[in-house]
Image (cartoon, rainbow, N blue to C red; front, side):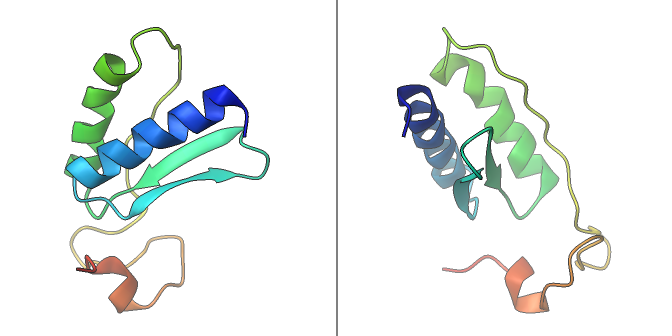
Amino acid sequence: LAPQIETTLSVLTQCSKENHGYGAAMSGSGATCFAIFPAVSQAEQARSNLPSLMPDDQFWCWAGGVIDEISGKSAFLNMPDSFHKKQS
């Protein structure tokens, strides 16, 4: 991995662990790195931590959801209900 991608994944993994996320990964060759959280509020908290963890880097970050928070079902993905429950 390129050093910048490795650093980004490490920081996203740290944010994921600290905010009870599911983990961090990258798309394809690393053009996009991301972390997945069970709730938008946890994603927003992780996003707010990024500037202090990566003060010298410029990045674009979005925290939002694809899961209907009322029903708990995915709005775009056909995933089983067990996917949406935090695994211990």
